[in-house]
Length: 231
Length: 264
Ligand SMILES: Nc1ncnc2c1ncn2[C@@H]1O[C@H](COP(=O)(O)OP(=O)(O)O)[C@@H](O)[C@H]1O
Ligand SMILES: [Mg+2]
Image (tube, rainbow over all chains, first blue to last red; front, side):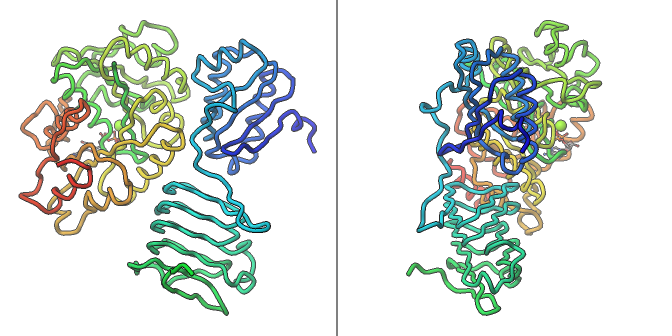
């Protein structure tokens, strides 16, 4: 592993990411930070970032530049944590939080533990065009999934809202549909642009909008459409 | 107590610049002090639409880079007291200005005027980021057309992620006849998808193009339907409760919109 990468540590917070920078020349650290984000841009896109800069003393121009650079990468910087009083002052001047225990960004996404090792991603918002959600487990959306939004889940997808975008469920997409039998997608209104369970694409759902909540699953080699009822 | 408003859309050519120029006129004619800022660096045209292009000496990049004082770059529109334009630079690119520069500029302008109206370029790149950075409130403008609405949805998602709050919607170029014949998305269809507050519906109006070519924003022509629609939006921005224009004879479409927007 590249030793330089050890200069930056990433930790998931309940509602965003915390990146901790090691000691080093600021310009270089910033380059490294941007490079790491660029290398995994899908992972970082849309993230709320808190940055721990240690003893770095940063000026307004430096933090502004950092924030602009992050914003270009669709990462929003909300906090700068530092041992340096100067940096703390600068961050406050720019309207950034300087402590992460206090004043967190509004919590919208949190994983739910839904069984032994199955965790569901819980999204309380409408997924708008251009949003792509990838999750190795189940996904629950309390809101609509608009045209141009995509959910790629290895587990099942439940949408308490209207599905008008695209959903791909059931293990890795390359696997045979038979191996992920039982995978399903539920929505209050089922009108997807594209719905795919493992390698199988459900065509019939397109065009017809059902009034009732629907559940679409793939069993024994074919799609099943049924009313979605709790049981 | 001044307010910074940015109009953006994702898609180009939907009427942002038209709207900025007309809202500037409409707010100024209500006695407000307004500056319109062209955020489309490299492709400036707000000055042309406002008919002020031959008065440009300094532009936004000159202000940001300190080559002139803020007031020197504010071109006064002689048609109305209290209306100004800060033009974009034509020969520079969007990277010449950063979101932080825009925030500083916005804060300075707060001391000068009641309203700062920022015209955003199309897209979701740097120019867009610049335009929304200082905004207190964002208006998303779209046309009743699937691709424009899709882009508007994307932009709304980004604004929400950037914690800019939920924007309000201006639906421009609505043709009631076509909506009635189901040849065009209805305002209802658009609101159903975007699910944000409506602040104005502007009809398709040929006089918009004529006005643009004359450098006299459509809001100067109070007889025109589009001009009236922009005056209504200005009134709503100032907190007045103005009913939506009755573009169709009665009932139907427009009464449903007022219900949707929580007005009546
Ligand atoms: N309500 C309207 N009715 C008719 N034409 C319009 C209307 N609004 C805008 N236009 C025309 O659409 C074109 C694009 O408008 P513009 O304001 O330059 O869009 P943008 O700034 O979003 O690129 C112009 O030719 C303008 O005259
Ligand atoms: Mg324009």
